[in-house]
Length: 319
Image 1: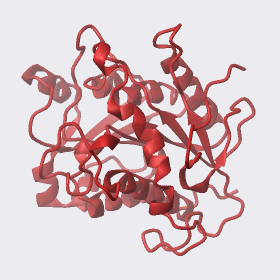
Image 2: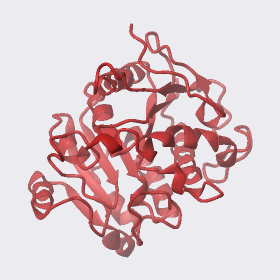
Image 3: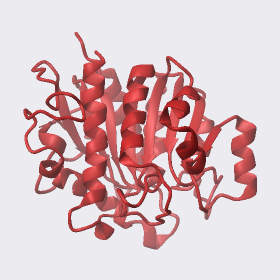
């Protein structure tokens, strides 16, 4: 089988002290990290945007997210892996482009996700801009039906930009075209993005559940969870700008009024209990804009910690 990923390049070579595994041919694990630094560029200057540095930047603050995996963590009521020696937690490295075959990294990311899922693991993907989400989602074709839960300030229903249909403004429209995506719930919408009135209407016509940040704050996360179909397979896509810039400031388009950490934590724990979270991505972090304490990357890591701890406690990986 072709080599789909490469090892992380420096400092923390894996996220949260996980085991490095880049051979996906005979893959077996319970939880798998995958880096997807590159999406689909809209122009020559965006081939290497700052978001491409985010997977490594998130890994590099591992010891700020979790000092030691065996220590007690109040977010999850126990150590990172809940004291379970039978849980295999791995980092599969990064899917990088091949300059000789433009766009081929998307195909390899799709195959990598399919291999990870066939190997029994829940994938957690580190982006990259939001253009990485749809190549990742296409690898879930054997898992569906899936409810896509999307945290973002922006709608992401553009059909194309500069002829590119898989870019960072289009992941939810592309997801709506996948036959195994049965429900779409978008949370935290506010301010302006690249969406036009026609894109908003396309989301409404599809039947997406749109929950603005203001409605979310007014009704609370429990009521938001009540609007998500019960008992589903949930894929959670978190755009960093969906979070409030007080907790995730390192984004391209910060907008006040977003989801706070407690709300995001409640959403994750609620989804884990409501059905089964089958995967997650965190995208759109620009490390060069992060604070001295690397707050944005630390917040991303703490959301991942909460998903890992909650899913283990919920019995996802009981043998």
